[in-house]
Length: 225
Image (cartoon, rainbow, N blue to C red; front, side, top):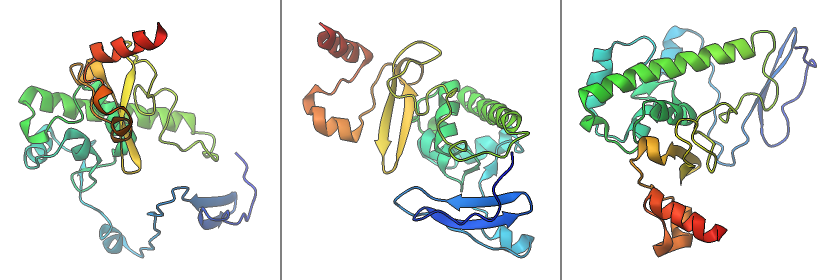
């Protein structure tokens, strides 16, 4: 894809503009929290200083994965999104991995059975490889344009799909919002029917907050009556 040459970084969200013979690479940050940063490294040693040290899931063994899984007592959501523990997952793909496993995002890592630990390891590899191949195929002939690099893909199963139907069982996808992120999950596939409290909605609904699929569907039926 041809790009206009020598473009300036846009307004408030622009961090840097790098000019190349075929166009300009713009680095932007739309978040109001402004947590992005750019670093210049002159060699491999300096680059290594910025490595948080997380396990490379596409290169490690099941044994290595089990060791780090058992050595930290975190929820699986936190475990998968902490770059000091595992590398290259992040918020969106952790939702997809846990849905595909299928495992609760609040299941504690140190309490995971050997079978579930193996399933999580294999699912991490499968989901990351699948999406790597999909994105390489999608952008093989074209550099991604504005809005094409996103954490919300139309063919995701649950991430960013709050209120839509789970492709595996047809149950409405739920979410939990925290800080500047949101976690998406399927009630039936992952939580055994339990609805995890979303802080903003919990404040609004208070005692009317549904705890199970049956309560949620009951509220829906009342609203439609």
